[in-house]
Length: 361
Ligand SMILES: Cc1ncc(COP(=O)(O)O)c(C=O)c1O
Image 1: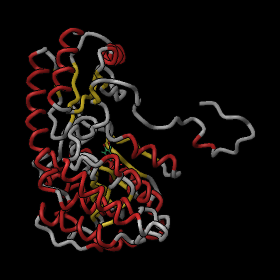
Image 2 (image 1 turned 60 degrees about the vertical axis):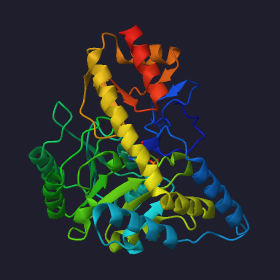
Image 3 (image 1 turned 30 degrees about the vertical axis):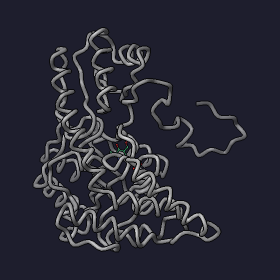
Image 4 (image 1 turned 180 degrees about the vertical axis):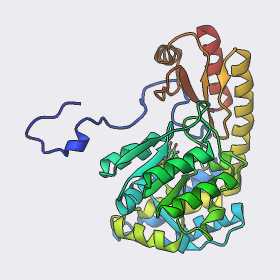
């Protein structure tokens, strides 16, 4: 992007472009790891009724601390992980990206370390918030070697260390015992370990929220965008020690989460059983997709998320990406040579994708 001389844009932003996957017309949208299943008619109705109820209060600012929603999020996590969190352990914002931004605003002091390839917004928000970012490394099969990760923490002594599990864009998850070892190393350098669990509901691994009560330097980020099929509502949250949450209050904008967002997120949490049932369907479709890709001679990276990274196609990744788009299938070129990432869609979308691939490779 080029900038005019008169624009006093900060120096460290001048070479950046806006983040975002292409939003272009397609028949199958398999590029942003959304949940393909729309909310049920019953849930849509409950949301509509709630919005019409809170519409009468929109002259007033929202509950600045979103206490009811945070209480519900804490009890959702307690139900999944047998923990004992209260609203004091949770913080909620407009998507987990806003949570990540708040973490950088509060704690981005010395440097931030992440093990790439991983969720690229971590590095981008570091840059935007003026925090030096260190690209840590993984094994060549994209798994994370615990000893290596610990050595990188000890070498760089970051204030923030990011682990995404299941990792985006590769899909692999990390066992809790390994996370605990990395957490010890992070504690020794006086930092926070940020575990981004955006895709946790798609994985069988024990959540890092189980480490929080004994390890106040462990912070877990979750979202309602994926398993909850609620990406359009923009609700992300963290689970952490109450002191971390207090720090979020310092950096957040007053009234950052609208009355409507808070109210509809609470309704969605009331429908959690129904919404999470869709997760089982997506996991079964993921397994079918892995087999279908293998039968086309392609190699997949083991995934515990709602997407699959694959390789082994004859053409350049960019070429295959655009050929698929011409056939109505939008997937993601994540910038890894010879690899592409596909989100698990509904049955029709998955079939369209596999049939298109068959014709192209
Ligand atoms: C690992 C990871 N973290 C966070 C997010 C952001 O999610 P949201 O801001 O919708 O909660 C994403 C979105 O794709 C993601 O992949």
